[in-house]
Amino acid sequence: MSTTSPRVLYWSRTDLRTHDSPALHAALSLQPPPARATRGARAVLPRLFEEWRITHLVFEKDTDSYAAERDKEIVELAKEAGVEVVVETGRTLWDPEEVVKAHGGKPTMSLSAFMKATKTLSDPSEPLPVPDSLPDPGELTLSFENEKPSDDYDLNEVHRCSHPDESYVGIRGPKDDFSVPTLEELGIPEPSVTTPHRGGESIALKNLADLLENKEYIATFQKPQTPPTAFEPASTTLLSPHLHFGSLSVRKFLYDVQRATEAYSGPKKASQPPTNLPGQLYFRDMYFAAQHAIGPAFAGTVGNPTTRYIPWHLPSSIPPSPTTPYTIDSPTAHAWFLRWAWGITGFPFVDALMRQLRQEGWIHHLGRHMVACFLTRGGAYVDWERGAEVFAELLLDHEPACNAGNWMWLSCTAFFAQYYRCYSPVAFGKKWDKSGDFVRRYVPELAAFPDKYIYEPHLAPEETQKKAGCVVKPLEEGILPDLGVAHAPPPPPGGDLLPLKSQHLGEKYYPSPMFDFAERRDFCIARMKEAYKAGLHGDDPRVLDGKARDELFGGLDDPDSNGDETGGGQEKDGSTLKRKRTSGSNAQGNLSGWLKKGRKD
Ligand code: FAD
Image 1 (cartoon, rainbow, N blue to C red):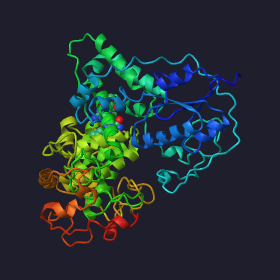
Image 2 (cartoon, rainbow, N blue to C red; image 1 turned 135 degrees about the vertical axis):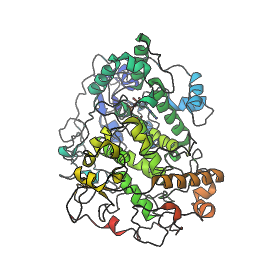
Image 3 (cartoon, helix red, strand yellow; image 1 turned 180 degrees about the vertical axis):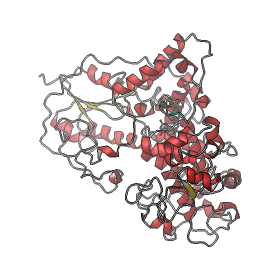
Image 4 (cartoon, rainbow, N blue to C red; image 1 turned 90 degrees about the horizontal axis):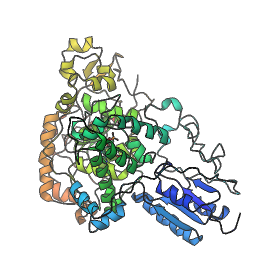
């Protein structure tokens, strides 16, 4: 091998594909004799540069805040090592940096602003073909071994049960071949996998090809008319996890959809942005560009100039804390949050959606609307950041930009402002699915309820409930887990939470609604109105130092300020109770018994 031959390290992250990969093409165009691929990071890459005498590092651009910071560091380290860095855009249709420039440095806060900005840029290029061949990686032995990262904050800890994480055994992985670790190697037992959705480029391309066969579906797709209650198959493409991992190129998705639409000659009119499929992909790009303009503050309220300040319950801690990420200002609201996260709110449509999310890692967009509105401005009045954290943990398609952006939209803190329009957990489900098939599927304990009561089983006569094999009654103490995990509610003690069984009688039960929805909706709208009037945004000094809550919103009611320290949360009336403020403290002390006790059955 000549000493002048390029030695290329291809760093693969959210671009797990060979089709339409500008970064892979750039790496191959350097014509390296062997090309090395890796998924390494800060600690490993500089050592690889040296050991493998790398001349070029190639990767796909990632504008997520964490990734951008990491990549900046890596580029510096590469420069120090005399390694040339090649970065290509491929994760989005347009480079978010270019979109922001075209929009005068401002975030794109509406699809029309985004479309206007991208009009000044050239159209996304045609997808690139799959390379004819990939060079053999050559000799991969190394003189050093991997250092296991610190596990101070191991977010996967709750899922690892069989044995410790072995994916860091040796730098080449347990099989010595740099392959992606198996679940077994990650210490996560295979039977604990409940999602039917599978990853990988072949599956992504097959799923897209199958959808394209139905040209009418593709050409006339209108997002607001796709039922959130459809399952097997879903009513939308379900390609978001593949876009997230890069196993499907977003440009290929767009071009294939456009071609199928052109080829469609049926009787229906082709749909247009924003509701058609290209419109959905533009929304994705819009959020990436908005995030890029704001930077890390886009993920929350504090420091984010685009988002309105609302004095939600369970606000993020100031300053941020990895161990105590939020303040429990209301034990009742905290209980509501945990019940939402585990799908035991007593509202069957909300519970079905949250259980689908937990089991399968994906829910329909309008289902996300329902549960996000319910947690924030249309029910529990809990900070959207809490919901976004649960979504981040559970979604297979989690994209920091789209997740935070959509949560701001749904909570009416940015992008959208019609806070007086709330989703009813009863009427919205019924609109799509009168007989409640979706609820029956994901809340099986209600499967035998008559259609009439499927969205409101607590209204069914006792006899009907008994006949259906499930009684409806308040949530018993000890069901909800103790607190302690940084970013998401931990799993229940002992594993199985559902179906709920009565501690005394052992009979199956479903919880009665955790609050009166109509009352909560009115309460939320009144408080949103007040917050809108105050007009504070995340960059206001009073938001930055955490004083806005007390100074501007100190006199408002909260749901558990009736002096009752049990904070049980069930059937409480938020609007009639006086406020007892605990904000500013990370008040876990007065949580109710039934939050703290383990379940006994
Ligand atoms: P389709 O309707 O088939 O759309 C095709 C593609 O367009 C999707 O795969 C997705 O990449 C993109 N897209 C569609 N709608 C949106 C949208 N509103 N915003 C951004 N991109 C969109 N999407 C994510 O990819 N990651 C997230 O973390 C995420 N979090 C969300 C949180 C909330 C509260 C809400 C309301 C929406 C969120 N979305 C997120 C957007 C949207 O719900 C999903 O992209 C969509 O449901 C994925 O299903 P699909 O592939 O069948 O979409």
